[in-house]
Length: 319
Image (cartoon, rainbow, N blue to C red; front, top):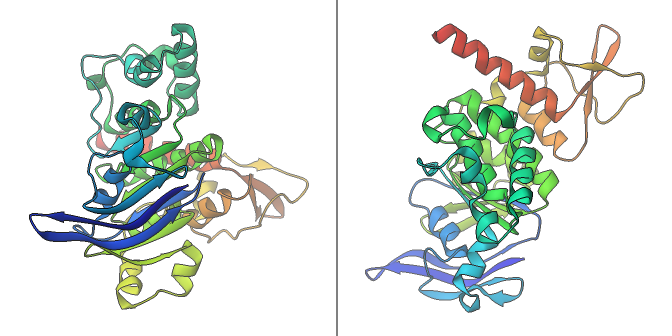
C-alpha cells in the first residue's frame, strides 16, 4: 500500500498541494486526473522522490519513503513519461534490459525477458531487438518505454500522461495494452492524465484533483453515477476521441471473432461502445455478442487486433 498522510508542497512560500490524505491499494490501477496545475504530476513524483513534500509523510509497505535507500526505492519503481526518453545510442533490447542489468540479472535471463515482452506487445523480437529508437514510430517507442519500465517486475509503475502525444488509434492500442499487462503483472499502477475518458477507461479508482486539492476519489461507476460537485460533472463531460468512437458492430468489418457454442461472460449489444467492452474485459476473460443468430467471443486480443487494423488503414490512406 502507498499512503499519503497530511502531505503538502510549497514552492517559494506558495502552497501548490494542500494537506491531504490518500491511500492506494496493492495491485490497484489508480488514476490521478485533473486540469493542468492541479497537482497530479507533483503527487506522482513524490512517490519516487523526484520531488520531496514540504510537510507530511508518504508510506510504502508501511515504511516512510524518506527512510528507504533512494537507489533501492527507485529500483522497485517503473516510470513511464510522455517524453519517451529512450536512450538513442542503445538498441531496443539494451533499453529494455537496463534495469534488469542494474539488478544483476544474468544476461540470458535478461534476453529471454526481452523476447517475452516484445512478443506480448506485438513486436517480433527478431525484427526489433537490435533496432535503435530512431527507427521506431512514436507508438512503438512508447511500447518500448513501457517494457523498460516493467521489465524488472517492479512493485509500482508510475505513468505520467504516457499516451497524450499519440494519435487516437495508437493511444487506444496502448490503453488496451497497459490494461492487459496490469492483469498479468499485478503491480500497482499510478497513472496521470488530464483526459477523463482515459481515466474512466483505465482506472480501478480515480482521484480527481483541482488546484492542489483532492475533489473526489472513487470508482469510475460511482463517479459516473454520483459526481461530488459541478466541477466533476462537467469534467466528466469532456470528450476526446478514442475507443468511445467505436462500437461492437465495427468489429464485424473483418473476421476477428471466434464462434462459441456456449455463453461466456457478459453479452453486449452491437451498439455497445468499445470503451465499455474494455471496462468489462478488465474483470472478465471475454464477453459475447450475437450476430445473425450466431454467438461470438470478444477478448482483449480482439480489440487490440482491431485497433492495429485501424492504424494500418490510416497509414495506408496517408501514404
